[in-house]
Length: 106
Image (cartoon, rainbow, N blue to C red; front, top):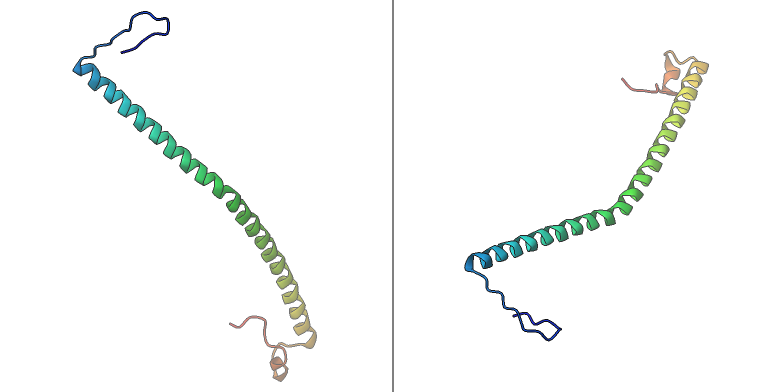
């Protein structure tokens, strides 16, 4: 029963069983939709919290990659210097080869 504030008479709605079932189905559908929205929002919020940590990991990986590239350049320079040193001593073979072993073992 619904009673208006104006002081007039109340209104009574009479619903059939079919209307009650229809309203109940719509209520369940609305509850399921709201639950799905809540779950999807929670999943989105969880992923958003991980974004900062993933960005920090990405920055650390980029810094590490830059260090690896710098080490590779330094290694190339050292290998070149070692090759020049071997050439300076004439290490094509012989007994002196034990003093400065080859750069790469085959």
